[in-house]
Image: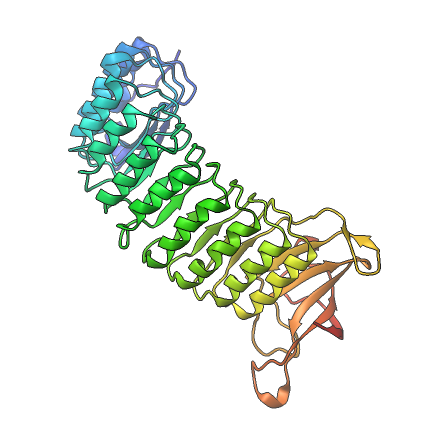
Length: 429
C-alpha cells in the first residue's frame, strides 16, 4: 500500500517549477488501484526519471500507468524492467508511449521476454520514437525477435546507445543480423553485446559490419562471449580502419597471449582507441610484454584494464618501463596483490604494483612533475620508487636513464600529497 500526501495544486506546482529528479518505486507492489492513485502525483509533477523496476505490474495497471506517463509527459527516462506480467495491453501501451512521447529519450526494458507481439509492437514504435538510449538486456531476443528489431533499427536515425546483453545471441543467424545492423546504421554510438554466445564466428560477422562504421560507432562491448584468440584475426584486420571507435571491451574472453600478439600491431596502427578492456583474458607476462610495446607506441590510450590475469613481476616491470615513455595513459587497472612468485636466487615474495600516473610526485632532483611507479620487489619485500634520474647540466626536465630508489609506501600505505621520501639510488634497470 502506497500513501501520498496531498497538497494544493497551486502550492505543489509552485514548489516544483522544473522536473523533479527521480520517482523511484523499485520493488513496490503496484496493483491497479496503486497505479490509478499515482495520477495525483503525475498530474502535478514531471520527473526526469521514473523507476518501475520489479513492481509486479499486471496488464491493466501497466496499461493505465503508462497512459498517464504519456499524457502528462511525466518522464524523460523510464525503467520498466523485470515486469513479466504486463500482458498484451501493457506492451501496447508501452509501444504507444515510446512512439508518441516528445520527451522520453531513454527506455530500460530488461529481463522481460520479448517474443511475438512485444517484439513486433516495440520494434514498430522505434520507427518514429525519439529514444536515444535503449536497454533490452535479458529479453530473450535470440532468433525472430532480433530479426524484427534489427529490421526496424536499420531505418532508425535517432538511437545512439543499444544494449543487448544477456540475450543468448548465437554465432550464426543472430550474429549475421548484428552485422547487417552495423552495416546499415551509422547513428549508433554504443553497442553492448555482453554475456552472449557470439564466439569467434559471430565476431567475424560483426567485424564485417564494422567495415562500414568508419565514422560512427564509438564503443563496442564484447565482454564474456566465448571469444578466443582466433577471433582476434578479423578484429585485427578491421581495427586500423576504424576512425571513431574509442572504447573496446574484450574482458572475460579466452584471448590468451596469442590473442594479444595478434591485436598488438592493429592497436598500434589504430589512432582512436582510448579505452581497452582485457580483464580476465588469461594473459601472462608474455602478453603483458606485448601490451607494454603497445603502450609505449600509443599516443592516445587513456585507460587499460588487465585485472584478473596471470601477470607477475616480469610483466609488471615491462609495463612500468612503457609508462615512462607513454604520456597519454591516465588509468591502468592491475591486481594489487599477486600470488607468491619465485624470485631470483630461489627466494619467494609477494609482488605488488600500483600505477600512480595521476599522483603529483616530485623529487628534489626533478624540477617537473612526472609519473612514478611503485614496485614491491622480492625477496626483501621493500618498496622501491621507479624514478627518472635528472642531470642538472642538461637543463630542466632532461633525464638520463632510470634508477630504483628506496621509498616509503605509496598512496595506499599512507603517502599523501607530497613525494615519498627517497634515498640514494641503488642499481640501474
